[in-house]
Each structure stands twice: as C-alpha cells, then as structure tokens.
Length: 144
Image (cartoon, rainbow, N blue to C red; front, side, top):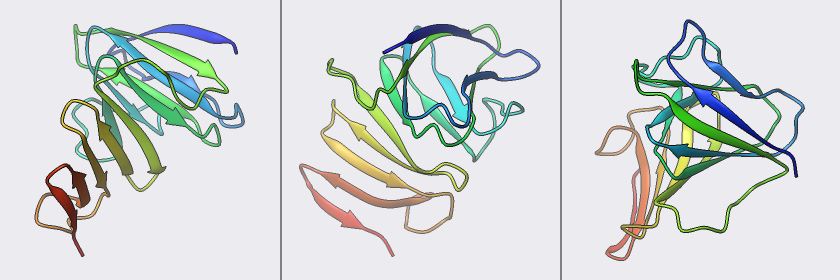
C-alpha cells in the first residue's frame, strides 16, 4: 500500500490529503499537534462544525469518495500519513475517528484510554452538544 507523508500547517488553504475517487484511505496524525479534517480547502481550525479534530497518534478512515483536507493551528504544524487502501491500523492509539456522514458532521470516536465509543452529529440533539450516543464501561446512553 502506498504511504505518503504530508506536513499540515495553517496556510491560506488547507492541505489536500485525499482526492475524490482515491478509494479507502487511512489518515494517521503522527503529531506532534492536532490537525482538523474537513471537506473543503477553506476549512479552519476554529470552525465550529464541519471539521473533525485529529489528535496526535490518532487515525481517520476516509472512504475516498470525497475530497478530504486538513489544517492546523498557526505555528503548530503536524506530520500526517495517508495510507491508500488502509482502513485500520494495528498500533495502540488513543482514539480513532470514523466519519459516518462527512458533509453532515456525523462521526464516531473510539477512545482507547477511557474505553468509550461516542457518536456525534452536527445537530443539537441530546443533552450535550451534538452527542447522539455514548457507550462506555459505565453503560450505554442513547439520546433522542
């Protein structure tokens, strides 16, 4: 599988990581800083919705059916790897983010440190800002 290494920073336009039609691609943030993933080259790390934060040592599985861009906070660049054909990565990671509706802001975050699975959407459903469900060792919580 081809792997590319890209430096993501806060430049006038976000860095394109995946092009529509590339097929499944695993995006891995090698760090040292958080990057924000979105659908357009105009995304900013300050966008309130439409972007997914990808912390260092985390991965993001892109379907490859749409363009994917990344940006970073000013002065805080990060190295990102794209792995063509990759869908998962077998290394201990703190979290993995899976997009379920890239244009709607829906996503699922698996946090290995706390043992939680959290599902989000871009609406204000649920008692906590867009959280649709939480699954953790403490129980399963679904918000309608």
